[in-house]
Length: 284
Figure: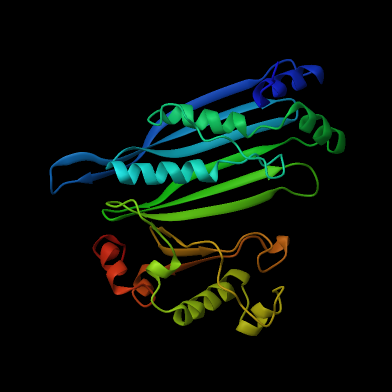
């Protein structure tokens, strides 16, 4: 008989003396955009599902913002992105998960599917507990950071702990067109990367709380080149945010450097056609 990862987890916990698994789930409406021009309500709507499951030495959590209303191509694009970012088992090297094939309109089912599939197997649990007495697990948060009439910005933060000195965090982001579902990349949004780099350098000076660009360079792995973040930027109520992944430019102790270019400065770096999509609805 083939044992699924979920079944293996339960058996493994029983073998190791755990008496029970505790699971809880909650769903709430979080982000809604109303199109007053057409007298429509809930033109775009997201719900957020919070679910978790825990056992001896292990806890898995997920907080998933999921689109339930909007035009079809927009919803499909975001749901495909969700499938992609959650389609791996962080406890198994190159461990891919099958895409959720149930009711795509059921946000709760989607969240539970990926939460349980991202659990370690019985063997993984035994190995992890044997090398660490601390609790280990996986936590995912997918949320909407900006919802306007023309664009939606989202971020996924994934944290896993498998023993050792500290866990690992990965951040994935995306900006979507509300009408076409298109995923924008840096080249679609930014007019001049030279001007952008100047803002990034100033942002790093502020982040590290130093005085000069040379002070920043002294902290970097590569002191000759201050590279742009490899992760796509995302929008928030405060402006356009860039983030460096752990170890991308500095040691773990310095965290994940984050730079927000305020709305008043965004027009200096964004392409005119893109800035026009957001200009009327941003905080000045």
